[in-house]
Picture (cartoon, rainbow, N blue to C red):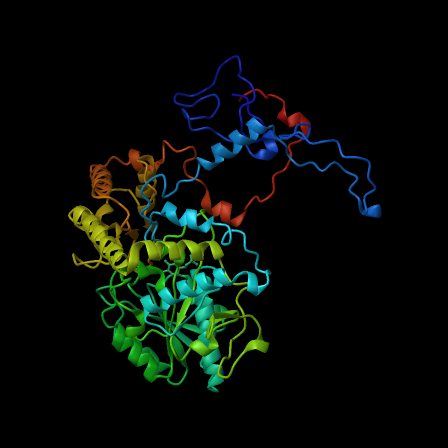
Length: 530
Ligand SMILES: *Cc1c(COP(=O)(O)O)cnc(C)c1O
């Protein structure tokens, strides 16, 4: 078939040349191929009728552009189709089950969207005078109140814009507290199973990351923590621990670990990405946590994964609260006061600086608070219980066929399998995940955490019905049995039904092509197929 330089068909050839199951257009039934807007756009059309401008003299002097602007333009129907087709290419929680472990891909209630679009929330400007946004500030204060209440903590820094940003904020508060006490410890302890952002955060702040190996049962051993503390006596700034951990297990010795780190003058940073398992059941403040980020976009249902910005407020213990960054909220006699600058500080307030120019992600705040208020305290607790129940339902439905690295025991809101059930089948975790795409499922989290071989971390969340879980379990069982029967063909080239199959991810990362080049005029002429 004739192709232009973008690999798109240009004209049929006499000899034909469309292989079996390939289509001339590249479309697969009603799944449309979509060219880049630069390829289909041109500059002689316009989607709207504009009045001819009257004569005017630009104030740009000699700086006015002389060359053609060369932006791609489309007619209105073309523009509609282009963006509607693009919008249908993104797999989303609104389209199907999204069992991505550690990501809490739960349903985003539409009520949240309605609230976030209310004028007064949707159209506030960060530079508006404070007197005109008292309602918005009140809303943020109410969300902050829910966050400190649910976590049993003293204060919350609202501005961080995602989990990783929250980690940075919490660790900067810890660093500031050490500095204020005249200490300069250099070591941060991080368990092996930690999310990559934990050691990255510590390293970014100049800390040496000391790893703590996992116990046989996938949890952190207090003795191992004590041993590392002893090895680095007097030099431990803190520990970064996830609970429930990334193996989907509750760290039972968390209080003893907190006590050990506090006895060494260190702080306990908890990665709160997995908070969805324990909301309303356990309060991190009661477990000895000093700082913890909360991914509003995971636990509290604000959209994420190509769906919108994150938000990662950080709750702080009494000892760290004074170091919360600007801007912050202070309880005043007439309601919450928004403290913007050093000039407004009172005794004892020692912000370490600021994380963001403004106040954070307003739309995410509204959505998270709408979620909390529509559930109520009892509803939030039930959501956690259902999330844990659903993960265990998946575990029990698959554990006879797939392999649990830490044995058959209750998991929290996600269940971790390793790849030993694929041993000698010739099918890898990656192949298995690609075959799931053919079945219409977004794959689970793969190869994370690193502590188990070929990890598959499945988090169904509480929003899935029993019927949806039954179909998912049946599909997974079919795939496992197929792999074990030696049907490698179903896996090795998968996905077969997706518009694109296996991408060269390494090359894409190492040699990214970030700029579209207009092909030379001669190249777009039909060429004979080889
Ligand atoms: C998602 C996640 C993070 C990072 O959160 P972002 O909002 O993506 O920056 C950190 N730790 C764990 C365990 C996570 O699952």
